[in-house]
Length: 343
Figure 1 (tube, rainbow, N blue to C red):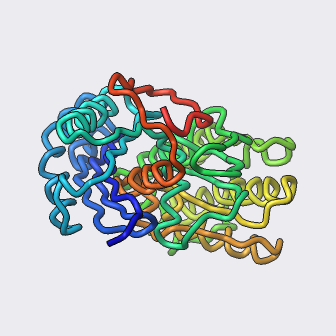
Figure 2 (cartoon, rainbow, N blue to C red; figure 1 turned 180 degrees about the vertical axis):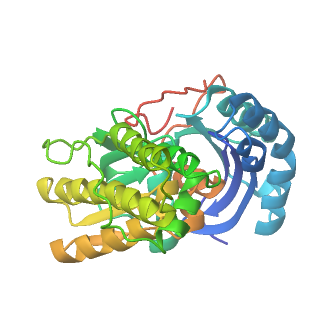
């Protein structure tokens, strides 16, 4: 027997219904039902479609996770759920389901922060987080730099995007280039055949001395460049555009992340979120960390995208720290601040 908490985690902040089962820092199951194909024809996530898909997928995904972990609901010590940030309707489905499970089982409920969960999930692969560390979280909805003295109780914002998130820019540029949705994997693949130095795209807020990001101007610059080629009747070098755009994004992300580590005297950088699955971001982060004497931690790609394992991982951390569970009238908060790790 073990005294480490067995936690069921539920994630429904966007278009993935994720259910994870974690014991301490050990991942037992990570079941995902994605509605991405239902959104592809719209070129972006439709909140109402996502909410309905979560509703339909919830019970089967919980059952699949429990089966994969070889445990029953009765074995679970606590239920953790993403309470925010995210799409309001989608969050509500997960929060309502978690409340039902917690109430029905008589188990404690932990409403957790989606971004803090992206930090906590790395412990499932690389063990306990160094205290402190800096986290660079990049996804379709977020681009944030965080100082993390303690993922269970102390997460501090250093900087964030002032307009489009990095993943959102990937989606929009993929649409301009007639690639698929979500744009990240398609841009990554196309870029491998391109020359990242072939086009000089702008790098927003590159030398402004802050830890904030801006990708709206870059996205517009790519669209204008492509339009000008098309107006002139010239072919658009898709691979080169993808590579040059991707380089502009990861150049800014990694430069600011390294600066945040140096300025705060931190020797470990964690990269998480869906865009952390990008091969060029991983490579450049590794290169720059090595040059700066900083240890880089990046979870495997499947743990970077939204999943229930990350919610369960943070839940297990909160249970282990002896923190008080959430009330059963826990709200879903689409704009939950990162400073609220536990709601």
